[in-house]
Length: 233
Image 1: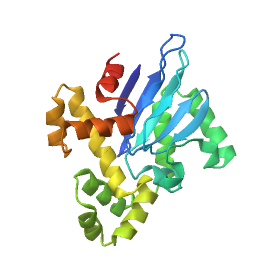
Image 2: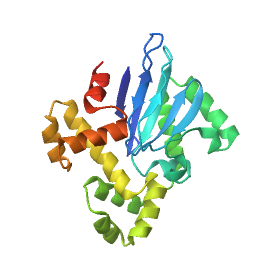
Image 3: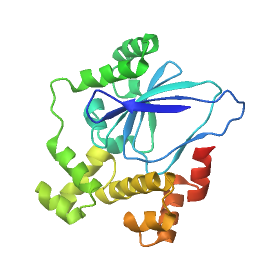
Image 4: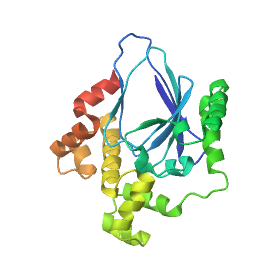
C-alpha cells in the first residue's frame, strides 16, 4: 500500500509504503520523476537519487517505508552534495553526513509516532537559515513549462554550457533529460485517468502515440499498457 500527503516544508511530499504480506510479491517499479528522496526503511536512513530509468524495489512481506520527496533541485540543498553524484543510486545517509549525526537521527525517526514528520524535521533543520537558490527554482519552473533550453539559458543569464552544468548540479542531469522526465510524468497522469493515448501524446508534445509509447518503454522499462495494468493490480 502506498500513500502520500503534502509536507509542511515547501517543495516536499511525505509518503509511506508497506509491502504486501504475500511471499514472492512483485517488486515495486519506481518511476523517474527528477526528485530526490530521504527514506527510512528497516531502521536505516537512505537517500534515493534522481533516476533516469525506472528502478525495481524488491518486495519483502510487511516491510514498511517512510519517505520525504524533494522537488527537483531541492534535494542537493538538503544533503549538501551535487545531484549528479546521486543519479540512479540508493546510498546510506551516513555516506553523505557524519556517521554519529546519522545514528542519532535514525534513532529519532525509528522512535517517532509519525516518521514522515520526523524526516521533515531533519530536512527543515538542514535548510534552516538558508534561502533556496532562486535560479534553480526559476530553471525548474521554466523547464516544467517546456521552455526551450536556449530561452531558459537566456532568462537565467547563462550560456547553454553553463545551464547544463547548473542543471547537473541541481537536478542530476541536463535540461533536456529533465524536460523529458517531466513530460513523461505529466503524460502518465493523463493516461491514468483514462485520457485516450493519442490525445495524451498530442497534448504533451509527443509526435504521435507511437512516440509516447516508445518513451514510456524507455523510461519505465515496460509498455504503457503493461505499466498501467501493474499499477491497477
